[in-house]
Length: 411
Image (cartoon, rainbow, N blue to C red; front, side):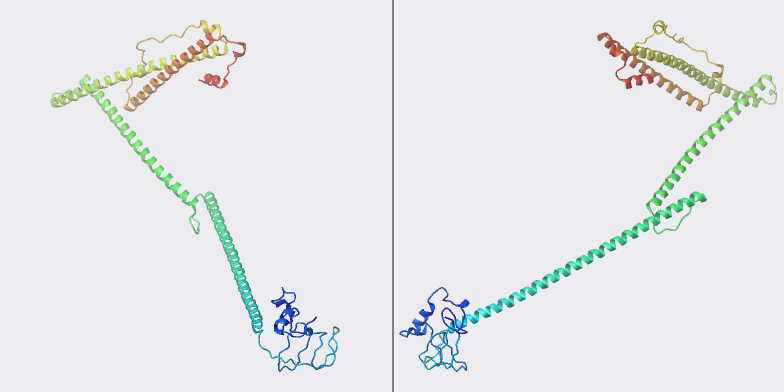
């Protein structure tokens, strides 16, 4: 059966609908409610409670197809026939469903609160999203601005660097064309200009040091030349005086005191001549030693060359019969060699220093030559011993290590 509007179809109670009914799990909820409320009432009511007395303008409408015992005209059937008249129930409304209405209103109020809270939260979420999007947009704008500023700075630095390079190249071209330094105006001193200035200052300092050293050398040479000239003049003067004394041109009766002075000077000159003769003898001795060393050096060089050729011949198995039968070179004569007439000339301290250096160089070269000869002899003896131990085969006619062979050839 269909319940009127505002009445539950399951329990036939007004004030709620089937979706909010608390007795939906009980199949005969309407009969139970009717039995509890109308103990001993007829079953023609269909489990419905009597309508309460009210002052409503619209009368209470019963269930469809239900016959009332009161005054009524017509029927309200299944096909929704006409209904006329009304019946007022004798029972009064006792307010037993007040709690159900209260629960219903509580649920609706709670739903409204939930809807308000949801709307508020959705608004807050939207505001947060908007703020986040705004912050992201601002950050992106700041990053783009920074990138633009960095690009601008890079462009400016590139332009400045190009300007400096052009300015430096123009300066170099002007200096090469004009032959003098030109100071072009620039914004800042570049690294290249600073390095160039430092190099120029270092060059100037080096030139100053070199000029000082050259000046000192020139001064020393001038002093030595002056001393030599004075010594030569004194020697010429002494020679003239000696010749004059020998001739007797300068002897007079009135110059006895001058003769004594001359005699003293002559004695001093004789001493100087003796010292010079000793010095000359030492120089001649040194010259003879140098000549001997040179001859010995030439002899050692020849001996070294011969031994080198012999070693090469032994290596290549091409030793000629001439090399075997060749007599050794004659040893230079031991003793003093004849000194040329040029050796009797006077030597200056500078010449003596040069002779000492030549003597030292000759000694060093002699020692080196002796060491090389000794090493070659040792190498030769080792090679000969190895060849005696192992008979040479046909494959060993050529040297194994060409690099060592050519090094020995170049010695």
